[in-house]
Amino acid sequence: MKRKKVLGFLGLMLLSLVSCDKDFNTVGADLIGDGNYNFNRYPVQNLTAYTRATGPVQTNNMPLNALGVFEDPVFGTTKASFVTQLELNSTDPDLGIDIEIQAIDSVYLYVPYFSTLEDTDGEGNNTYSLDSIHGNLSDSFDLKIYESGYLLRSYDAVNPSEIQRYYSDDKNLIEGNLVSAQLNTSINTSQNSQFKFQNGEIVVYETDGEGHFLNSDGNTTIDLTQRVVKERMKPGMWLDLDKNHFLTRVLEANSTDLFNNNNFKEYFRGLYFQVTPNSGAAGALAKLDFSSGYIVIQYHSRASASADLKKKSLKLNLSGNTVNFLDNTYNTNYQNVLNTANSNDAMLYLKGGNGSVAFIDLFGTDDTDGNGVADELDEIREHGWMVNDAVLTFTIANDVINFDEEAKRIYLYDATNNTVLLDYTYDSTTASDAKYNKYVFGGILEVDDNDVGTVYKFRLLYYINNLLQSEDIEDLKNIRLGLAVTETIANVANYNLRNTFDLPVAIPSGSADFTVETVPLSSIMNPLGTVVYGNDPSVLEENRLKLEIYYTEPN
Image (cartoon, rainbow, N blue to C red; front, side, top):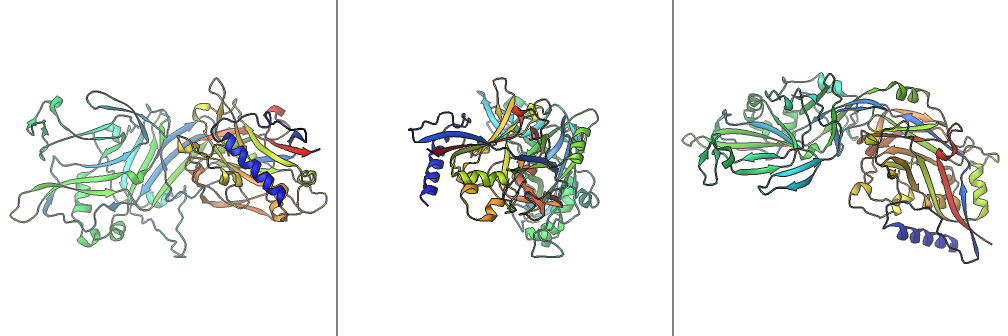
């Protein structure tokens, strides 16, 4: 018990020393002894790592969803479409009588992009830069919006006690049940056939309710420089939708269909955002929080038979069940990698979405005494080392991956129990960008002086200490790790695979068959990828996957 307390203290001391610096130092280089300890580094000799394709993945009700087309030179082209339910912002609305949508009314959809305010000029005009968009902003794709006739269930139809799952390849459920013509038919092709993600702010001006702009005196004006700004909105998707469709389908709906949102979602089952690549354009793909989007239906009606027509509006939120559909056309080389992956790959291909993850077996599979524990781990445990640190390093294959579209962070997890590692749990470090929290645990892309990615590193002090100290044989068998790209380090939920797959057992004498049923949700949300070296003998030694244990040993 006393030894465990010392080890825990050293671990906490290490975290406090490095928590103010996101950069990995040369671990162990600055340790100073007092003559009673020898400080050593032990490179683990037996490591195996291998890539596996995920196949279709669960994609319903994710915090972020992808939309667009992304052409990656390493992995291929991803096309992302999306379907969402709608909810009334105010249920059982009093719409009035003699409802009509006039020429000056509009029906529009707005979904904000992730953006950063860069500058504001003297007239209040804002300049933004966009975040979470991949590809070429100058490239377009074809975007069509339809009403969906398919009811997205919350619970499984066969077993109502289970949450309904929808997968990245379920697009046929929606496309086979469309109940409208295309709804975004504006003559402005940047809203449909030539859709682009644009970084300009959206400005809404004051009008008199009849389509005339107002100046600062409240009078109508045709001088555009005299218009009064009503609202400035962050850059986002702005689409003018078919007014007649929303008049007949929403404003003229039976009152029972608008009484509550359960009724409304059964009646109006959602919107489908269909994406098609444009010929000759690589396109661009954005990660969006559709739940912050909405539709505004402007209309005119009377409060009573004797009242005048007044302009009003009804707001629909993009809320409820959602599904992201991901179509991949893999590059030949990447497809070959997935087809030929074995138990110790020279390179590990990590791709988000319905892509690929990797698995790492620490300390090898040799178990000569048949106790279910790897021989190398048995040998290390016999030394009684006091572990000061443990670092797992993945070197980036820069001759393969393009840095510009490389995953900026990867996530290491306990693949046996589908949970986080101890080092993740104990790391409370934070950064100005929350995506880089827990930077002591690591996985953040490190770059050289030329802004070229070099390595990803993870600190595994607590994980390795647990393996060396534990008396529970089950802990010692738990040495299989999973590796995936991540969108946000805070999200450690797991989503299901449509088709599970088996991995070879880590220690034949001590492990049962290993079936992979889930992958990290944060990986599904990130369309990017990366390529790192494994530990195959064909890899140059300086590039191989490394686990280095830094320890002290009493004289």
